[in-house]
Image 1 (tube, helix red, strand yellow):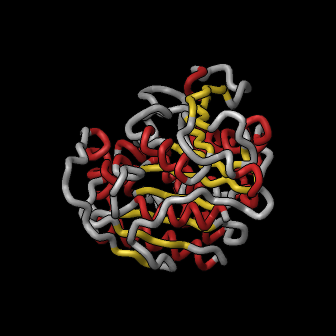
Image 2: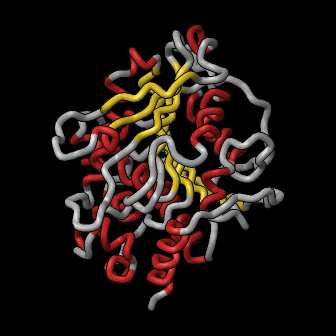
Length: 326
């Protein structure tokens, strides 16, 4: 078994297990690319020059969720799998938005799942709306397989942009953020231009992306054959796997990718793949930044983001999003 295939099998075991973040002291992250700070910053509400007047209403605790169905063109999907939850300050307008995509190996997870409260709190701190997205999941013997998951996320992003006025959102300040399988999905929708364009928007409509600990930046036939996650979600056709791989798509479609913050951890091979993705983004002219979360587990990268006083993933993510929204 190759190193990458072994990593794929290990990823399946990691997602199947319930990991607890514990109360360990946060390790110090290693930072590559253009990110230069690892220390918590003074909290503050982001204001743009065009929306500063309305922006003062955006910060603070967010109300919600307000659940909306974002696509009605699929009759075979349960309504909750094509729905999203909106968290916002009532009456606020012109706020940036973070579209959150959950993980779970493309076969599990929920928009109201683990650690959503800390994501809501982080968005409120930044003066942003949070939209948490569900998408159709892979099931044994079911019909859901790539590119269904990517198409759903792209349609959800388009729905948010199209409904920006009623959501109190500034459609020119849209950020995508996801963990694990969700990190793969937010990465692929901004590297394969066809996904967003088929939904009626484009990569130009996304300001930035935060990708939290994906192991699927480059999906190979060997991984698809040995990993139950990859095989079930993508099959083993080489062309399909290349189409689902953010590294391949970033190299094939370099112009128009937004800035990306990549948070990674684990084995040297896993970290190297994340760095390879960031380098592909940078080669296209955007900023690709890498945060190595050190000794954090896969689950901790998600559960610790937004926790008060956390010092590994929250400060650089907060700084990146604040800069993105300016």
